Structures are given as C-alpha cells and as structure tokens.
Image 1 (cartoon, rainbow, N blue to C red):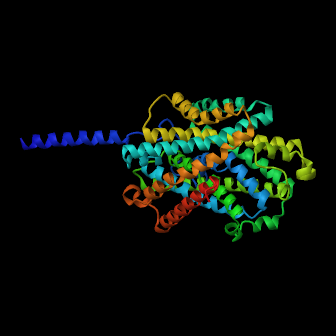
Image 2: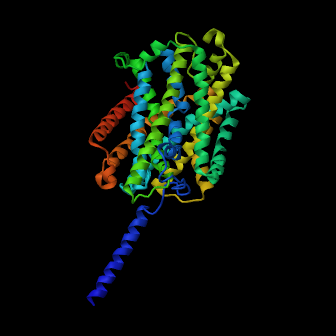
Image 3: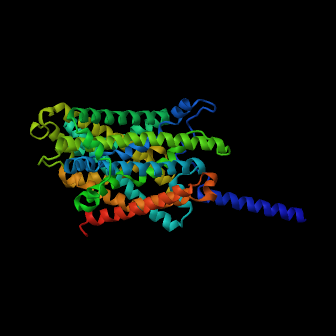
Length: 464
C-alpha cells in the first residue's frame, strides 16, 4: 500500500514537472528550424574548427555597421575630423564584451536572451518587455529600410515608396535561404559585408587621409567631454553602435552549431571559437565604421555643404566643388551600392531578430512564412506610413532616424541588465559564469551606457 502511494506521488510529481517545463517553454528551441543544424568537427585542428564556427559573428556584426551608423560616423568626421575615432574604438570594445556574453549565454543554457528573460519575469512584465523590445526592432529596421529604399532610388531611380515596398520582399529571400541551410545565410551576409568593406576602403585610399592625424584620433581627448556638441555626436555614435536586438540575435544564432551540452569540454570549445568569430567580425565592423569617419574627415572636413542625409553624401561624392579632383559618379555609385548592401544584410538579421523576440517573449507559434512576414510588416509599416504621408519626401522620412535612435536608447538597458545578470548567475551558467572582473566591468559599462543614452534622449528632445 505504501509502495502504491509512493508510486502515485512520483507519477503526480512527474506530471507537475512536465507541466512546469511545458508552461515555461523549456522544451522549445530558439530558431528551432536551424538550431544545432551546423555540424562541427570533433578533433580537427584550430583553423578547421574556427571555419566551422565562423558565420554567426558576421550576422551580428552587420548590426554595428547598418545605415544608422553611417550618418553619425560620417558626420563625426566632417565636423571634428579624426577626433571621434577613439569613440568608435571604445564602442567596438564594449560591443565585443557584450556579444561574447550573449553568445556564451546561448551556448551554455540552450536558450536565448528573450526566452530566459520571459521565464524569469511575470506575465505582465514579460508583455511589457516584449513591447519595448519590439519597438527596438521597429526602430532598428527603420534605418535599414530607409537606407535600402534610398539606395534603390539612387541606383535605379525607383520612387522611395516603391523601394520601401521592395525591401518588404526581403522576407521571401530569407525563407528561401532558410531552406537551403543556415550557412547560406551566413555566406550571403558575409559577402555583403565584404562589399561594404572594400567600397569604403577604396574610397578612403583615394581620398588620401592624413595618416598620423588619423592614428592620433584613436587616443581619447578631454575635448570630447568638454565640448557639448562633440559630446552629443559621440553619444550618437555609441547609441547607434550598441543596439539591443543584436544581444538577442547573438544569444540565439550561437546555438546553430551542434554542441553536446553534457560535455563541458565541448561547450568550452564552442564558447571559445564562437567568441573568436564574434571578435573577428566585430573588428571588421570597427574598421568599416572607422573608414566611414575617416572618409567624412578626409573629404568633407571644412566644407560648408549639408551632409545630413544619404542623398547629400551621394551628391557630394560626385561634386568637385566639395571633394575636389577625385569627385566622380563612380564614387557616388559605389556609395549607393554599399548602402544597399548594408541595408539588405541588416534587414535579413533584423527579421531573424524579430522572430527570436516574438517566439521568446510571447511564444508565438505559426508557419514560418507567416511569422517572418508578420515581423517584417510590423517593422515596415511605420516607415511606409510616413513615406505615404509625406509623399516620398526623403528629408522628412530620414528624420525618422533620430526617432529610431531614441527608441534604441530607451530599449538598451532592458536587454543589457538581464544579460549581465544571467551570465553572472552561477546556478544558470555553472563554471561558465562571468569572471569577477568581467562581471564588474560589464556592470560599470552598463551603468555608463544607460547614463549616456539617457543624456542622448534628453539632448534629442531638447530637454537639456
């Protein structure tokens, strides 16, 4: 009799446990269709292993050189020459730390940042965080959609509204690539990043920057803090660089490699090589952002032309009165090609981020094509509405970029605080928790970035 009761209690406990697991979504995988889909060699040498893990870093890195970064970086060079290169360097180092933490969180726990945040909050708080994060996705996509739409107009003469509608079809390309395998997505994005890198490397080389002054620009100066207008632009560069959706994306796509989480050595290897890949790709993003600022300094510093919009930059590169003898329609065309590459690569990863956030926070389950179309429509709707309302007026539409940075600034702490907290949790991370110096460095950086972004918001809204 006692044995039967014990058995009944055990059965009830098992059912409760199964129900609990189901209710928390612990049995679901992030990006389930590609989770663990890429095989990695077991006993290969360093380089073969690194190649197998190379890819996710490129998808994350494109978010750090999206069209939203272009205006701030080029404006930084055109207004203050090379002085703000130190801000780009610092922002890149911060990004490397945060993205390494995000990747480690996904590999060790088998869950992304959105899933873990939802599981450890109440239902109402989870809905609130989802709304804030969804706004961040929309804000991020605004820059990519606007950039792609303007690039299509510059290259092919499409009306801006038509260009924006074409970018909506990116989701169909993503569905096709998903069927071909996640490595195809990584290869496409890496190719687009290479196009951006080589275009700006070429344009910087022919602009003949002052190399000693350029190198000196990577050393921080007190003028950045004392000069209010320079500080404002510096905050804009930081705010445009460290974006919340990349932390969710990084924690998810780090799980695309097959890893046995019961084998600590294999997990450690995955963390090591994923971090190396992330740092390499973010170094490429650092180079691209540096090239943008250097180009702005070499070509536009001291000029009186208005360089506040993509079209202005496009026209300036072909105007000998502004950039001198090197002015050429080819430079303008290459600029538009790089802008299109940046917008397209960023929209692909933005759609993935939207899916990760929607599945993680509200556990939405629907056919992949419908889910991706929904996330794309949520992002494109505000831009399209503004484009129709302003009859395709580019100046008005590009003003959305400022608004998008405000949204990103607001959403940033809602991603950073959980990330630092989770990766510092010994119960969750085990031996892979943050080391003490990493933990406190991350908390200090988080606090500083929150303060800087609040200041940026107040500046943008003209409250200070």
